[in-house]
Figure 1 (cartoon, rainbow, N blue to C red):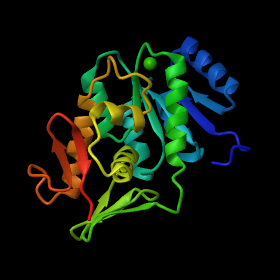
Figure 2 (figure 1 turned 90 degrees about the horizontal axis):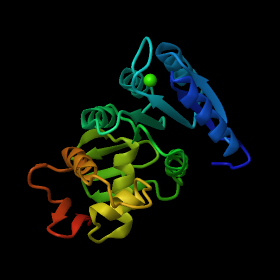
Figure 3 (figure 1 turned 90 degrees about the vertical axis):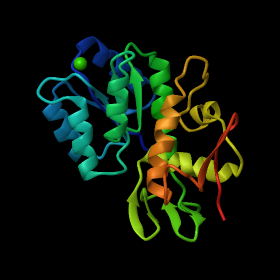
Length: 233
Ligand code: CA
């Protein structure tokens, strides 16, 4: 991303105090911030505004954050989206991820954590064009830039998170622990109180896309006690 251009951020949040706080925070951090308090209006802006990142609350008037995220994904596979979910609502988190959100943060969240997540997501969206294609084997490849690929002659679409996981594992060429993935791919500073099931959910989704038999993975393998490894040839 050209740093002379301010990153454009849309915040869809109906709680006035939170919205004001987030707007001030991101303006302070150099973002060009737009906001919306209504779900349908938020979606309208999201689809027309060319935002580098969209922060979506879940509970909103007229249309909820999941439906907004889903509608955004219908139009754009690459739009960066972070959802603000209810605390400990695992259902919310899984829902958000399966609808294609790139990340989520549970309320009440730390604002500095949110700033870190947004900037980590923006860094990830700046995939360089030079190494944007990952070749796993003769039959499986992934284009990080377009979030598409082919697996055994099938066209596959990836979420950005899935592509980033594959990109990281591909760079490493060794087994990587769940904790390391949470740090490197998700951008968490500390993994002390983090749920590594998030990683497993994503690995399962990726296996469905790249493996001939996702239950007997041969490319993205689990090494007991160590973590995951992507075997390329
Ligand atoms: Ca709300």
